[in-house]
Length: 322
Length: 290
Image (cartoon, rainbow over all chains, first blue to last red; front, side, top):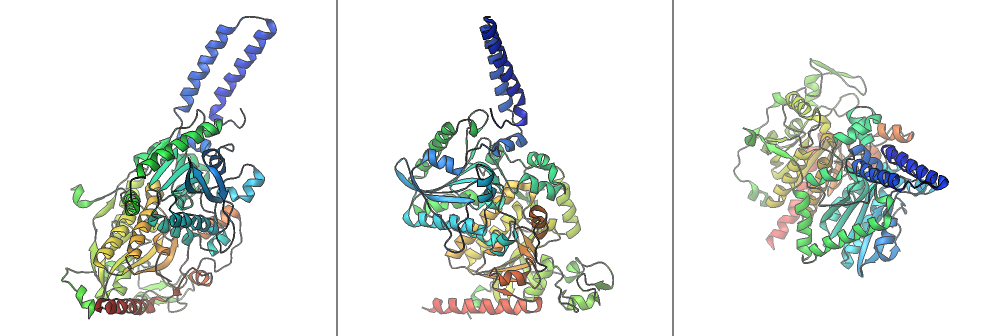
C-alpha cells in the first residue's frame, strides 16, 4: 500500500509479516494455512478496530491524503458526457475550481467543484485547490447558467480555504464569496453539495449553499483550516491537531449540528482505496436526494434551502435561562 | 410625508452618553493619537466624534457610540437585547471568555440591533463592536443580524449595518461559518423584495463578515483608513511571505480597486446616510401614489 498514514502502521506491519510467512511456507513446503488464516483474521479485526475509531485528526489525514479522489475523478465515474467550461468572463480561468455540464443517469446537470492537484506540478497549477475570486466567479457563472436552463446543481467541496494572497484581496475575495452565498440562496433549481475532502472556511461555503449538504464519512468541515484556527486560538499553528479535535470538524458532528443532511460511507481506509465504489456510493446518494426534491416547485425549492440555513445556530435568551 | 406613516408610537430607550465614554480610550483627561502622536483633551476628542484633530485618524467606536452619533437623538429601540451565546461545541474556555467580554463591555455579544430614525427616516440598524471578542461572528451575531434583516423586510424599512469584525468565531466553528450563509440568504430575500441595504465598513473588518453581509450592500461605504478584506495582512505576510504595500487593504486602497462606493469621514456619515435614504424614499413615495 502506497502513501500509508502513520496510524495505519500496525496494519502495514502485520500485512508484511503475513506475506513473509506465506513466502516462507512456500519455500520450505510447509503447510501453514492455519497460521495464515489466524493472522488474516487478526488483520481483519485490526482493520475494523483502527478504521472504526478514527479521531478527528486521523480523519483529517485521510481527507487530505495525496491519493484522495478529487472532483474530476468523481465526475469521470459518476456522470456521462461531461463538458468542462472555463473562465469567469471578467478576469481569468482559475483552475482551483472546475465546472461544467454533464448527464447524471440521463438527466442534464451542472457540476462545480474545487480541484486539488494530483502531483506537485498539477497542484501548483491548481493552487492546491485554493481559489482566487475569479474561481468563485467562474463557479457562480456556471451555476447561474444552471438556474437559467433549470438544471440541478451538484457541487463538490474540497479546499483548505480561499487563497490568502495580495492579488486575491485586490480583486475582491470577500465580495466574491459573499456574492456566491447570496446568489446560491436564490436559485430555483435543486442544489446538492458534497464535501468530499476538506471543507475549509468561506472558500468551501462559497460552493456550499445547497438544499442538501452531504459529507463523505472521513471528510471534514470547519470555519477555518485547523492550522489557521490554531494560530488564532493558541497563537501556534503547530497545535492544529488540538484545534481539529476541539472544533468538532468530523461528519458526525457536522450532522449533529444540523449542517450535514447525510453521511456517505467510505471504503475501509478511505475513498482512495476504491474510487469506483466510492463514486457509486456518491451517485446513489445524489440520486436519492434529487428524488426527494423532485416534487417541489421553484418556490418550494428556494424555501427548502432557506429554511435549512435559517435554522442553523445555537443561542438562547436570558429569559429562557431564568 | 410618506415617512410619517412609519412614525408609530414606540418605546425608545435613550442611550446614555456616560455608558459609551472612553471605552476605547485610556482613562484620564488627555489622549495621545496612536497614528500621529497628537495629544488632545478627551472632551475635545469626543466632540470631534473621536476623530484625531491632528491627522484625522478615526478611533474605533463600539455599537452604542455609533448609534449615538448616527441616530436621531441617539435613540434606539433595541431588538433581542437578551440573546446570548451557548457553547454548542463545549469548546474549552469559551464560556469563560464570553463572560469576560460581557463584563468588560457591558454588552451580551458583538452586535446590537434595533430600529430608530435618521433625519426622520425610520431604519433598522445593526452595529458591531470590535471590543467584544474581536467583533467575531458566532451564532448570536448571525441570528441577530438575520432577524434585523427580516424585520426590515417585514416593515419595509431600509437596513443599515455598521460592520467591524476580526472574523468568524472559532469556538463555534461550523455554526459560525453557517451564519455567513444564513445572513446572505436573508439579504437575498430582502433584496428581491426591493429592500434598501446600506453597508458601512469600519476599522477593521475581516473574514466571515465581509465574505457575507458587509460586502452585499446596495451601497458600500467605508470610514477613512478602515482596513478590510478577507484575509488580514499579517496572515498573508506570514503564509506566503508576500511584500504588501503600506496602504494595503485600507478603505482608500479598496476604493481604488473597485471594492467600495465611497469613503466617507465620520463627520459626514450621518448627512450622507440622510441623503441616500431621501433619494430612495422619494422614489418609493412616487410609486406609492400610482
